[in-house]
Amino acid sequence: MFENLSERLTGAVESLRGRGRLTEDNIRDTLRQVRMALLEADVALPVVRSFVADVRERAVGEEVLKSLSPGQTLIRIVHEELVRLMGEEASGLDLRAQPPAVVLVAGLQGSGKTTSIAKMADWLRRRENKSVAIVSADIYRPAAILQLEKLAAQVGAEFIPSSETEKAVDIVERATKLARQKVVDVLLIDTAGRLHIDDEMMAEVAAVHAAAQPVETLFVLDSMAGQDAVNAAMAFDKALPLTGMVLTKTDGDARGGAAVSARHVTGKPIKFIGTGEKIDALELFHPERIASRILGMGDVLTLVEQVQEKTDREQSQKLAKKLKKGKGFDLEDLKDQLTQMMSMGGMNALMDKLPGMSRLPEAARQQADDGQIRRQIAIINSMTPAERRRPRIINGSRKRRIAAGAGQAVQDVNRLVKQHAQMQKVMKKFSKGGAKGLMRAMQGRLPPGFGR
Image 1 (cartoon, rainbow, N blue to C red):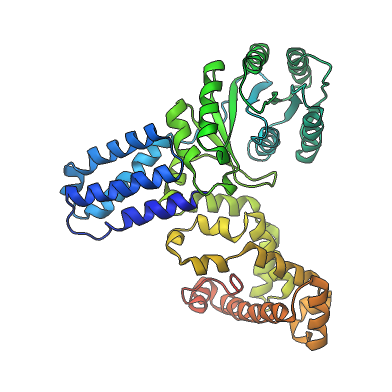
Image 2 (image 1 turned 180 degrees about the vertical axis):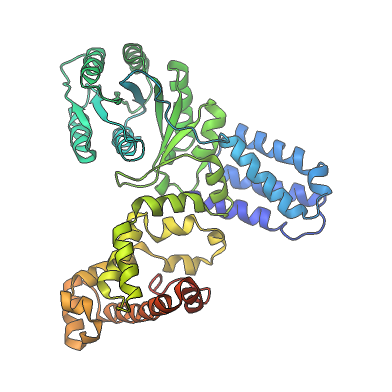
C-alpha cells in the first residue's frame, strides 16, 4: 500500500532536504508536486485542497523560513499534517459495556466485510483475550452465512446459526440473548451487503442497528474502490451512527487515497486495516505510523510488534543456544527463518516498515521477492533430512533430484546452497562475537539469501 503516493511525496519533499534556505517559490513548487501526488493517489479533491493549504500556511511562516534546517522542517510539517488528516491517534474498539459488547459491521458486497469480521474475532481473541461470538444477519446470501461459519471455526469463535428464512432483526435479537446467556465478551454481527446503496438496504441496516444497540458500528471500506468507497462511507454515516471504519485490501492498493480521505470526509476514525488475505493480517490503524510509511520513514514500531507476536520464541531460543554451542546453521534452520518471515507478510511487507527503503532502487526492491522465498522453501522441502542437516553431501545427482522435486532449475538449488553457505559464515561470526560479530560479518548489507 501507498507505494505510488510514497514515491511521489518522498521525491517532492526530499528535493528540499539539506537546503540552507527556502523561498516561497521553491515551497510553492514542492507543494504543487505534493498536490499532484495526492490527486494521483485518488485522494478526494476537497481533502487535497485543505491539506495543501494547511501545509502552505505553516510552511511560509517563520516556523520554516527561520529554521536552521528548513528542508527537514518542511518534511516534519508534511508528516504532522498527514497524521492530523488521518486521525492523530489509534482508536481501537471501545468494548466497555455489559457483556456482550455488540459490534455491528456494515458495508457493500465484495468489500471484505465477512472476512474482516473473522479477522477482528481472531484479533480480539489473540490480542485482547476476549471470548467472541459471530452471527450473520445477511439473509440474502446463504453462502455468506456458510462462509462465516467456516471462518468462525478457523479462528475459534462461537458461531450462532442463522437462516435466510428468518428476519434480520429477529436473528440479531436471538443472537444477543444467546450471547448474553453464554457470557460471551463480544458479539460481532455481519449485516447484508449490496452491490450498490439503496433505500431498502439502508432501512434494513438501520432496523438491525436499533435492535442490536451496538457499542461499535463499523463500516468496511474497500481501499481498491478509491473515491467510490469514500462516497459509500459518507452514505452509511448518514444512515447509521458510525463509530469507525475498517480499511480492507490495502495490500493490493498502491495508491492509498481512501486511507488519507476517509477520516477527513466522514469525521470517523479508521480502526483497523486489512493487510493481506491471511486471517491474522489485520492491524490497528496508527495514523502516525502510516504517515511515516507514506513518507518513506518506515514503521519500526509495528515491525517490532509483529516480530514479538509472530516469531516462535522457543524456536528462536533453540537456534541461539545451538549457535552458541558451535553447532552449524543448517538448511532446516534456514527454512524456519524463511517461514517466519513469510508469516510476517514477506520481504516486501518487512521492507515497507524499514526506514529509507522507499529510496531503494527498483532493481534492488525486485530482488526482495516473496516468490523467491517460497521457491527456496520448496527446494528445502524437496531435500532429505540428512541433506538439510549436512548440505555438504549435496552433490550433482542430489541437486538434480532436489530441483525436479521442487519444480525448479538446478541453478536455483546451486544458488540456495551458496546463499546458505554465506549465511553459515555470518552465523558463525555471531556465535563467536554476538551482535558485534554479526554486524562485522554483515558489513551493512542485507542478509545473504534475501535477493537473487
